[in-house]
Image (tube, rainbow, N blue to C red; front, side):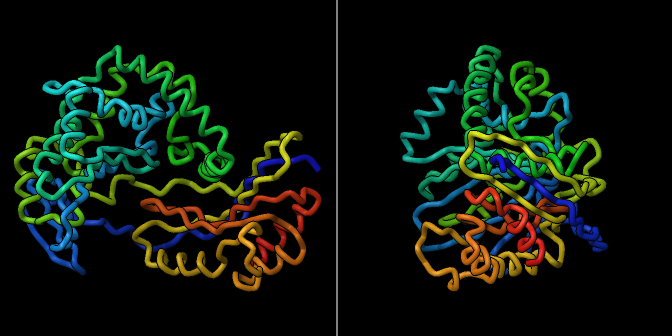
Length: 369
């Protein structure tokens, strides 16, 4: 049997009947609450500030989490969120790219960003004395990026090279296809980087419109952890983020999407006879972050566990599935996963196997487990 990628989510779980819960209500006035060591304040424009402080820490991490990723895109602008992540550090109205880099380096700080299917995050790791400067830099790149057309053209090649590297990572390829087949026709099924034709064709207006639509106060959380003072961070937020616009129809964090995406039980196989291994993922519909079953699913993930033949430990030290796979030489490794989103998720197992004649047995025992 030829090597292949097999992605199977044919065993559809029933859609949870629980009502989706907002992470917080849309704020109409500043309000602060304290819960389990985390302090949360909501400004009048809807911006949330959340901190978990360690008084002894001399360093801190501050970041802005935006409730918008590739799921907030259309087929036409798919890839815009990730493209903006690349553009964030290319210059603002008052700072060039070199100025941003120099200021961060002079503080001994680390500035970075990442994009997921539902969030875009910009963050800085810094000494606690430099928190005010770090927050100011974050606010500047989020609100005042120039989106220079020459820089946009240069970044196209960078993102295309990044896409080529991602295509070499079989785990990334498998999970992209798994999302595409599980959430067919839904924004959650699209890739984060976007298709190659979009990367080549996205314009400055496309990026600016994405910012205008999604970079709003009611869809942002300013987070601080470590040597951070909550009240001081609230003051910095009021100083630097109070002019952020609010969505046309604000819903509050956790209520961005009106309906959960449709989950489609289906299968996709990509055959490549030159590959020595088969990479296989099988999944059912999971649950969202605020679902009461979220932690139950994490326990279940732990019970199924993770196993790798190369680690040398006995299969009996892991789960029952590991023992079956090891004894019958069905796979070289596997890992269970519980990927959650706002209102849905994917729960399953990812296998790598060199025994290409026993894939049916492998799937049989996985489904039984």
